[in-house]
Image 1 (cartoon, rainbow, N blue to C red):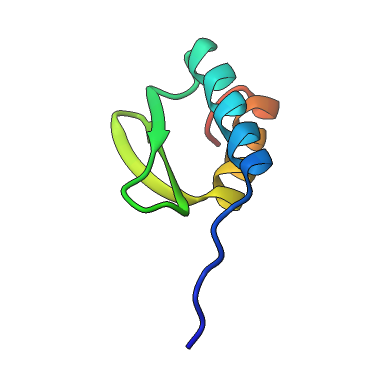
Image 2 (image 1 turned 90 degrees about the vertical axis):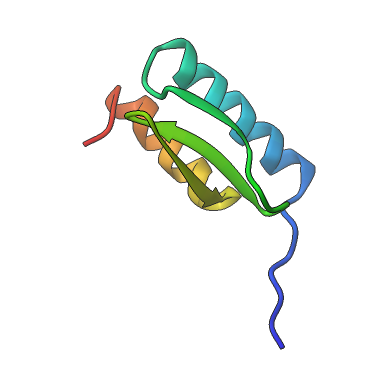
Length: 70
């Protein structure tokens, strides 16, 4: 049985910081811990979505680089 590993604290902190920056620039509507330990919630266009931390990191980097969702 394959189980997902919990993201490390460094990745969690990086995601939180990126989300805070995107929120401050009004690129996302909200963010926070997801329902599960290995997920982070990002609110985009009023819709909460749950992402694995690595996916959240990539998404937030993309949003910040492009100044929005494309």
